[in-house]
Amino acid sequence: MAKDKVEETSELQWGLLCRGEFSQVNGIILQKKVCDCWDKIWNFQAKPDDLLIASYPKAGTTWTQEIVDLIQNDGDTEKSRRAPIHLRQPFLEQIKMTYSGIDQANMMPSPRTLKTHLPVQLLPPSFWEENCKIIYVARNPKDNLVSYYHFQRMNKSLPDPGSWDEYFETVLAGNVVWGSWFDHVKGWWKKKDSHPILYIFYEDIMKDPKCEIRKIMEFLGKNLKEEVLDKIVYNTSFDIMKKNPMTNYLNEITMNHNLSPFLRKGIMGDWKNQFTEAQNKQFNEYYEKNMADTSLSFCIEP
Ligand code: PPS
Image (cartoon, rainbow, N blue to C red):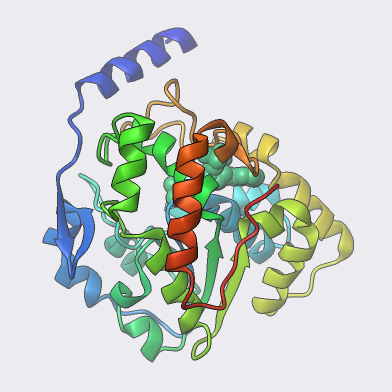
């Protein structure tokens, strides 16, 4: 079939899809199908050599996942292109018609790398019991929320965000899937004092990718040559990942990339194109209030 026909067909399929249903686990909004399988997720048995990549949605998860996969494969892009990212690294709380992240993980040989967006208090306890290494990636809240807004527009497995102004209110009310950004980033930040968690920032990877990739490499106990690190920097750049069918989620039927691509802009400071002046003021006050009880801070200006 010609490319424009394929695009037309998938656009049509997307149009016919209904938005998912939502419920809660311990006060955190999750997809209903995730809540319905919660016991299975909570009782997931982690193994000591599992690596977990955790994040709030749209914080730079896929970027971190691809960096990790390339480090694990010594920079070999052929190996990293063996499958789409969600098949290489199961998404723990993902429930699809034909498979679940848990089933995928259970079938996978060790050592496994897994992904989650769960807030720290909902992580299956076996990850703590087995002392698994965890990489947590965080992104400044304004860009994170703008990215999440556009993702909700294009992804029917999440609620329709409505207009930006409506979404902004929803966010301040904390009514977002996977919970409040503030509780998420603070909860994982606190946990790193008692658990092997490498806490990294989207903005730092942006500013000095090689430095952050080296940090991840050391955390994974690997030692790669400078030229391999350079190759990983290149192959995990926004432009390359956007063209890479194994990282751009182009075949996800719930996503309409014509509305907003998965790899959308990949920049810092896009919030300035979205927040009104009044929203910025309101958000800054909300931020101050909600971050008063943590040593965690973010680089919000580009
Ligand atoms: S998800 O759905 O939660 O797993 O999404 P996630 O991967 O966490 O976040 C997607 C945003 O990360 C941007 N991204 C990148 N930015 C810079 N460089 C690279 N290589 C890169 N890869 C992904 C992606 O574009 C989304 O951000 P926005 O601001 O929407 O562009």
